[in-house]
Image (cartoon, rainbow, N blue to C red; front, top):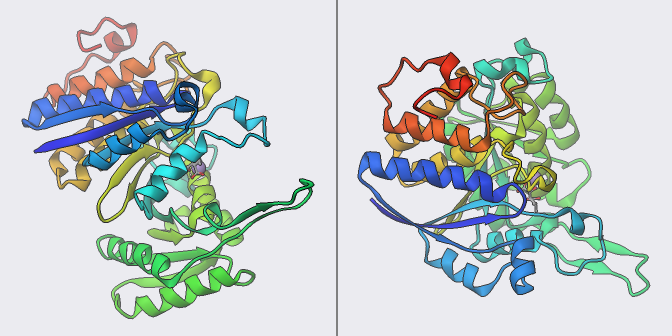
Length: 372
Ligand code: IPM
Ligand code: MN
């Protein structure tokens, strides 16, 4: 298959983790005889530095022409500390989502057996957790009208949703539930918010089309607690933009590190794949950023094009790296010399030699293995 992939590494740790995902995609292309071409674009703080615009026209063109986009991370502490900044890195990411109409964001949350002890939650509570979060991505309070009074003392953000916006993401979530355990949980705040009541109504109506899916409802405050105390009860979670942002980051606690969570953002024409973590600028260029979220996002990219064996091979390689503790320091306090690049090298090597099962664990950690 020929795929034209736009690569937007962005800010902070974005470039180093994305480089590992590209390395892995190149290995897949080689192994399976695909032709993947990569075109890089600037986005976020780096794009502001270079062009004054967090989403330059050239980047937009690269994305529009691409079959898929691989996105790194966005943000910079200098903007975080300046709430008055009019031009902000995040506008780059939000701009792409809106422009390409990437309305559905899919975030898998899987508790790996080999990482159960990395979570601050109890093993027996999180074991076998496997959740798919469907987050609406181009509506709600993120994109509603914003105001700031002239004297700067009054501000507002509006949460607006239309039936159309709810239906398109809900259909996809119902279908995902059908292909899994058949359970869908809508998370909202329908006891307070009018927009949430519309979500409830529309989703209830749609549910008649999916009689094989068991639909239930939770308020966001309750869901935030249930997710931690009993995550196994969930199969597919459907929710609006901001609740999904918060819940998915909370869910990373189950997995053991936010550096493991991948995501896909899709529209009818475009698709973007990105880790859910941010730019984490303070550790950039230290070689300690976990590239797995970006690598697993690349696997989701392959799934999107029906390249299942390819995606599965990446996931198998990731499983192996976790089993062998070939992981960055967020997951590994024993072998802190395992860098972002070495994790990528291991996964690349596994893809090139999937049959190789006798890797010498000790040598890998001593850096003496031929595979690193
Ligand atoms: C995410 C991020 C973004 C969001 C930020 C960087 C704008 O937190 O993708 O979860 O809030 O959607
Ligand atoms: Mn987030």
